[in-house]
Length: 297
Image 1 (tube, one colour):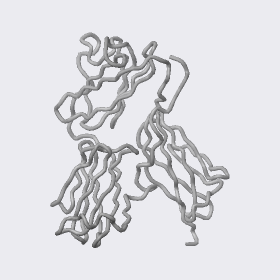
Image 2 (cartoon, rainbow, N blue to C red):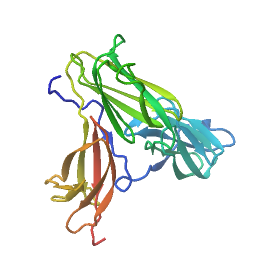
Image 3 (tube, one colour):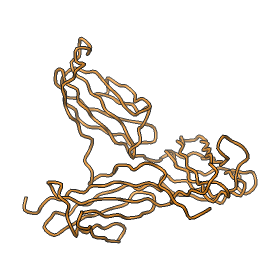
């Protein structure tokens, strides 16, 4: 394996309380209002995402009465009467998200929703194997799995279990698990993800391409600190995991962190301090904009 490293998934938006607002809605005139059901006069639509990626088959409920599911692009659309509703979004392996929505005659309200993954309380088993792309014999490698914890093994036969060193798979909390396969001679690092259900065994098959591209085991926060008008704040202090850095003249900062949730606090002279959580994923960049409010406002 060479020292070549790459960010293997596209740049993503922040998920975390305190530093990013909840899903917002915008009301616009609906050019298709004439097509609405005769007993309904408004529409609620949007996209459900996790870490920038669409969440398919999420259930979207309106006042626990009307429901629909998201398609493969994470989008949904519900026709309703004008009024005020509670919109709830649920999906296996994710924490539910609720918000209020007000609709008016002939309008479409866009409500995008960001979900965060959760784990437990049940457990299941995760089996993993690594093969060449398209299939074939398993390849000796290192296997790490990331969820509410991180577990890693040397898979001398390219799988867990392997009926030799590893008699069973990883025992993990129910929920979504991400898989990182590295150190496979002649192959680039590989990635996969799988949902583990309570009391069930899930199988993660990672197909490796020939090459020497690597996937970093850490993630990056690429952020900027601005004021209420969007103007960059120079020399703001950003603290994560007991380490602090300062923004430059463009208000930008960057930190490399381990996979997982991290606490971040931002302060600057003359501004109110802001603190919250940020999610970092291996091999990916979390883009973060932190807006500080002047102490005089």
